[in-house]
Length: 305
Image 1 (cartoon, rainbow, N blue to C red):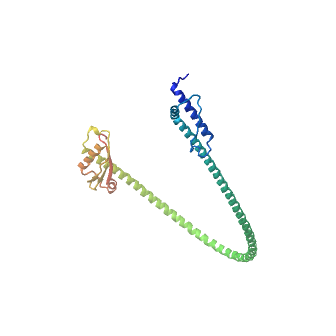
Image 2: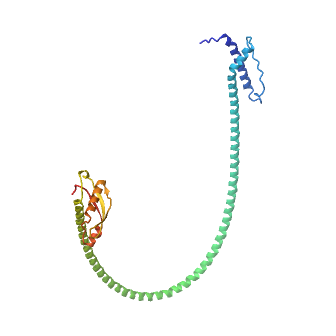
Image 3: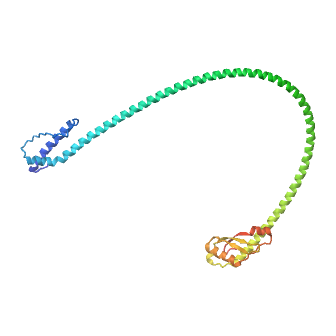
């Protein structure tokens, strides 16, 4: 596509382009020269046509931002290059430090190895000396042991004679002891059988008593439930609901206390009121039965038999 520029903009644009290219070329070739941006730049630009000072100012003004941007870009590239060089130098220094530490570690390892070898040599020498001392001690101990063995053999011979005499006496005593123990076992067995018989009789009595007490507990639990139900005001909204009450009774049947219950709130409230209304509940005169019922937990459910 062909662009038609106004005639009054052609010369300024050409001048701006020329200045721009000249500055960029100078900056690129002079990156490594010190103070390259501190001195004024003398730039000569030849233009094929005659331009006026006003046109030059206009061109410089138009493209000054682009020139500044290019200068900043080049300066940034220089800074990036310097930073990369600094990182490279730091990496070289780090590697040199690691190599130094590695050499020191290797030298330390060699010193430790030499010390270990010296300790092993000294330990080996000590072991040899100890072995020689042990051998001498063993030879001395062997001679002493031989003398001791002979003395012990003589003592054993005499001890054997005494042992045979004691053995005969012990055998006689053992037979007498065995006879006494057998008689004691027979007596103990008869005593054990008697005790087992008495214990079984006692267990049978206890079982019978426990059954009797349990029957009484069930009986009076039913009587207590019936007494509460007689004093209980219920309605259809309680059907299918229940409450467990814990009641403490005196030996006379007097209600000492009744808790708030666990279950449906309305069922618990009315059942508790029924207990308090009854005031006295049926209790057994049997102490064993009352002992199990002095604190009784009873589950109340309306409309259930």
